[in-house]
Amino acid sequence: MIFDHPIYPITNTRLSGLSHADQARVFAEQGVALIQIREKSLTSRAFYKAASAAVEAIKGTRSKLIVNDRVDIAMAVGADGVHLGQEDLRPGYARDLLGANVLIGYSTHTIDQVREALEMPVDYIAFGPIFGTSTKEDPDPPTGIEALKKVKELAGPVPVVAIGGINKENIAEVKESGVNAAALIGALYAGENEIQNNVSELTSKWSDKNV
Image 1 (cartoon, rainbow, N blue to C red):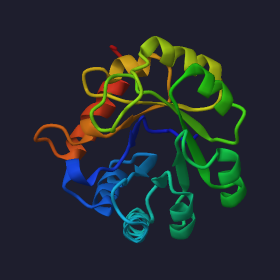
Image 2 (image 1 turned 90 degrees about the vertical axis):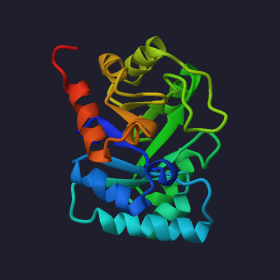
Image 3 (image 1 turned 135 degrees about the vertical axis):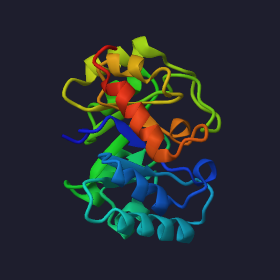
Image 4 (image 1 turned 120 degrees about the horizontal axis):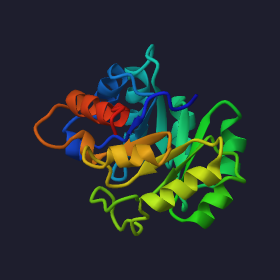
């Protein structure tokens, strides 16, 4: 099972004040299944170094490192997978390059995109933004919980990750949709709590049997 932990963290050096490697190390210590390293401002060389350091940081742990967008970087650093957007290399081409054992995630924002994704060689589908988000420039319109429920129904056995504006106040609602995990950025670094505490609280709210 890809997602045996409900929290799917996405690194952010600006919000955390930590390197990608240091964030990855903290998340791995919390036992998350997948960690996505996301970087939009570094040069290719700098991103390669950051991703390589993150791979080293979680060696020997149960966590796997996913590289956002960059198939070439994922290949170069020996990452466990890549997460692709609608404007990135198509999953079929990525699969040809990466082989059968590397994880491929794919972002979707509409029901039609989900249907297309289910015909592609992907290991999981991300859907959103579920709520309004401030951590992505020019985000797609919020989709809402009802659309998320429909996506999970359509996906069947393919894991679905919810993303976009998810926090401690609404993560239980996301969990009730039946999805496998929640991808998070801002909520991981919110307030004065350390990342470890935020991950713990978010996991607890997801797992609350009274919800």
